[in-house]
Length: 436
Image: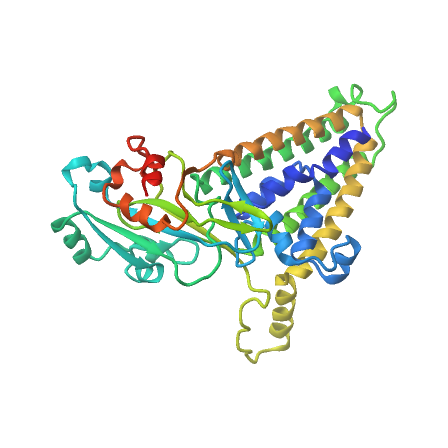
């Protein structure tokens, strides 16, 4: 029995891996239902946005935020980068010279073959593409912007002229690019569906507990040491589970809210192909060679994601408005609730309190109750691994000659439909890179 409760408390690496890739509220729900690694979730929230006194309790009072970012956040920054070592992606503390190219490929180039041996290539900034409504930020633009069509003159020019490849560069930030988030297809709707299923699993466990105590045909079969289960068993386990789930949901939400994710979508039929050029560099005594990195073959991409750590100072304060005493008090209360430090403290307290009551309630019940809880934990662990299955797929890569990374990319734009970064298996990029 104690082993099963210890299993629920820890499970550090599995939990941290899932938490570091959370990009929405549905991920928080998945993590909080039948949780594995309760202490890990609590400690993670404290490390990211906890008050100093809580950080002192867990021994992280002087920890650099970039250390927590490497292990717990989905973001990259000027202090944290993602690099390819030839076998897998590695998150490193430091900076490296790696360029991101967002290529918008028309269908005619993708499937034209030799029919279109010549095409135009234009380079534009991400800001220009957003202003022209060729790309739309799904996370921050309104429904009207998402439904807005591409300007007709742009479509006419594209129809009359040769196929045009647009290379988008994000010049608004010096942060390292997010390779892991864009090297596979991620669908938020699927995550939402699994989050709903996880809620049903947790409710099913509580329903089973209820039936073992109050359903007459089962009442005697699920006795405790041949005696009737004590009256407080189900109220304790039900209240404890609800409070525990709420506390862990808050803790996971704090970690998720410490980063800002932007999801950009094309507003026409163009496909998105990502290419990252990594220059030879030594980061933290680790040597990383020159590579071209691109998503492995899979579903066509119409979106790409960026994730950055939110500013410590947060958003600028809104101008204060005069109002009644009640409205002022409500505004102060809302501001306190919106503080991530306050939410971290609240989530920590609720999680520990909920675990205590859940532990007390399950201990007072039949041994099958803890077995069902263990089964739910294992089921949810498998489900969370399935949701993150895309992150286990390594991106495609091509070794390059140091100093000639941009030359390789420029040559690849001559016949892009034969390139591996376009999903083709025709050309041998490695031999061409050696020729450079």
